[in-house]
Length: 157
Image (cartoon, rainbow, N blue to C red; front, top):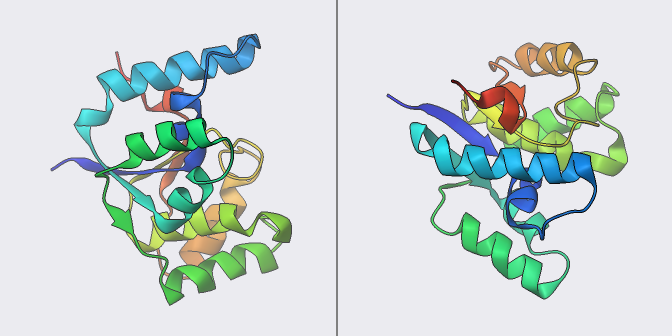
């Protein structure tokens, strides 16, 4: 049985963006491309309504590229349980209220039993200082917290 990976919007954005001249961003783009080409087939991938909504924002060409990559991926619904968990992450102060979508990504992944949440959002999601707090809130609601990681962390030799 394959492990389940929730793909957060930043992964798709790095995958489909035009090549950046900023070295850190270009490196993330390359890692994302390598993961997508060489590793994604080893996992069951899912996205949520939130990912689609975020992917639809911005430049129309970029939107088309992102939506093309997302086409066919199973879509997880934002349930009332996920909304409650997302609210708890905000109320606990783990995720700022201005970034409620970030808490929804975490909550949808947890409520749906994802093994991993794959993201490049290192400010509010894949943040080592926040992970213990995220895990505590998620587990207090009776869910296992998915392993939150970036594509380079989900590579194997």
